[in-house]
Image (cartoon, rainbow, N blue to C red; front, side, top):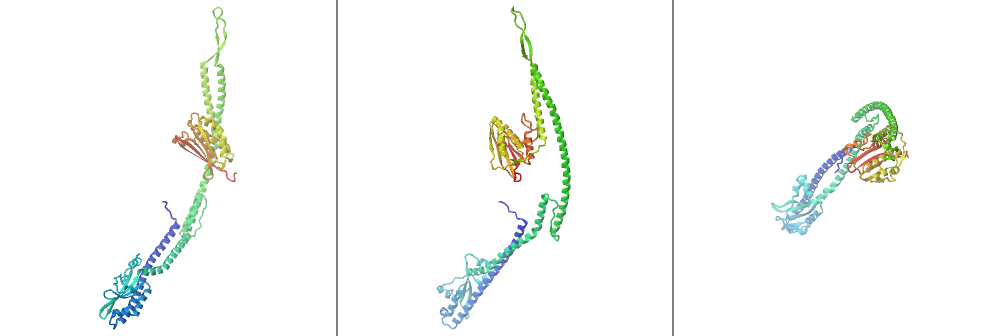
Length: 521
């Protein structure tokens, strides 16, 4: 699961919102507790008032009555008071009980003559703690509490008055009074988030300015300065940043001048070195040409002296020797061996000449003729050249170059030479047959990707770092110039070249070349 990271702005908004949220929750809890206590006390006060009213009327009814209980049952005023209890807030009913707990008058006529069980005392709950009050009022099942008040006739207990109060009705009162408070808390949280966001934007603006300045410095821009208010800590930080930026600008300017001087000096050395190596190569080539000429003359003379003349005796008519017959030419073994050595010397001189020619071609600066080049066309041009090598090694050539591939901005002749060198090397790496794939596709970063893939013997890991070195080769008759030329051509096009190889599975050369943009087309 990915972990979400909060920025400074997000943390500040979350922190302010959390503080306000905790304050709202704490105040809401305190408010609910006090509201519950107020509702309980109000319910207790209403029940007490109703009980006192019933008690006062009952005393008037039973005073002087021969049958007190019958008088209570028959009194219309008392019955009206009992029935009016049903319309009170949170009050569920009222009843008058005798000393045995039998109902003799009630707001519910169906309960007359029945025994009424004891219920939790409302007065005890009114004096309980706030948490206990909340637990009882918000209990899921809901309960009915009662207020008990004894009735005394003279000095003797006459009965009791019981007023029923519902916790569900009290809960509705609490909820009705709580809705405005919850709305106020939600509005407070929303205002806190908005204010926190505005404060974060205001406080974090200097940080954004500093980050922008650092980004510009990182991109190499010189003389970057920050405009921050100077009367706070960020202003001091901005001044320090400006001092550091000026120092970096001065250092970079000095380094740039020094680097320019070094590049100029290095370029002069390279030019001198190139002239020296080119001169040496020409000095070597001239004797090689002379050696080839004289070697050819020597071969001609040796061939003219390979056969020599020898007289052949013939028999005379009398059985004796007569005059010699026509001359017969025979092979001179010594000259024949010399001719073989001449051929070996000629082969080695030609190989040395190829090395010198390749060196001159590699070191000679060439002018790029950049133009839009279609990779598929280059593939078509090199196919006839590599086809004999592919057939000789039983290699199947597959070309994948869709028409949607962008054109390359490059030198067609150089790129054709590079692709041909890679393709021929790939065919030679599959002596037992295989598949050669020439692939072109759109690459990353506005480049064109060209891949030359084979299923050959692969390149050992220890040789991968040396294959582009000049004159490095693992072939018996290789010059070690082909891959070096490929690398040089790719560099001259500001491209990239990488190789991936697995011994026994094959090799892939991946070239990234710049594509043609609209201004170059």
